[in-house]
Amino acid sequence: MSEILVLVDHADGAVKKPTYELLTIAKRLGEPSAVFIGAADKADGVVEAVKKFGAEKVYVVDDTEIKGYLVAPKAEVLQQIATQANPDAILITSSGEGKEIAGRLAIKLESGLITDAVDVQPGPVTTQSVFAGNFTVQAKVTKGTPIITVKPNAAAPEESAGAGAVDKVTPTISDSAKKAQIVASQPREATGRPELTEAAIVVSGGRGTGGNFEPVENFADSLGAAVGASRAAVDSGWKPHAFQIGQTGKTVSPQLYVAAGISGAIQHRAGMQTSKTIVAINKDEEAPIFELVDFGVVGDLHTVLPAATDEVTKRKG
Image 1 (tube, rainbow, N blue to C red):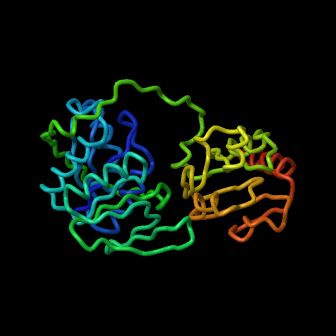
Image 2: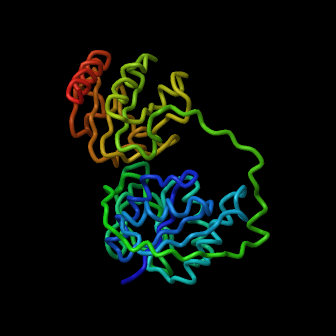
C-alpha cells in the first residue's frame, strides 16, 4: 500500500489534534506514516499517541541540532525522508509554520503544492475555498509528490491501531538552513481555551457586543469553545488582533461556528464560511450573515447568549 507522510504537529511532545485529523485523512489515501521532529525523550509518548490513529511507521528525528532555528531545517528533514520513503503524498497542518515548511519542501522536491485544503479524498483530490471564499474548487497536484496543507477540523479523528514501527532518522542539515535563528521567545499567555485555529467550536463577537464580550466568553466556556472577534470589534479595541477572524485575520473551519452580533461582511465570511455548521445571532433580520447560516436567531445577543449558556450548563449538569 502507498505510504502517506504526516508531519506531527506538537507542543513539546504533546501531539495536537490536527495531527490525528491528518492521520485519519491519510488512511483514505494509503498507509499513514508519521514524522516526529522533536526532543528524543518525548519520542516514545508521541509514537504511542500517533499509532492509536493508524500510524504504521513513525520517523523519529532528534531536533537537538536544529532546535532554535526557523523552519528551513525541518524542510530539509522532510526532503530527506521523502527521498528515502518515496511517499504518494505528504500532509502538513495548515498553520503559518506548516505552510512555510510545505512551500520550501515543494521547491526542494520539485513537486506541486496545495494549501488550505478543507477536504482531501483519494487521488488525492482536495477541496479549497478561494478568492475570499467566493468559490469552492477541487484541485489535484500533477507534478511530483503531492504536498498538501490541511486546515484544522477538516476531518473527525478516528482511532485505528497502527504498528507504529520506529525508524530513527539522522538528517544532514546544511549551513544555509541555519542562517535564521530564534534568539528569544515569549510564550503566549494561557487563556484556558482551545487554540482559535484548531478549536472544534468557535464563538465570535462583533460590533453588536458593544464592547461587552462577557456573554460571548461565558457561552464559549460553557461549550469548551475558542473565542473569536470580527474586524469591527478588533478595530474598536475590544479584542486584540490575535482574536480576529476574517480575510486580514485568522481563518477557521470548526465543526460549529457561532457569530454573535456580526453583520457578515465578506471580509469576515472569508475567514469562517467553511465551518461545518454556522449559527448567527443578530438583531437585524436583514443582516448578510443570515444568507450563510444553518441556523439563525433574530434577537439581542445580550439576552440570547446568557439564556443559551444557562441551558447548556443545566444540561451538562
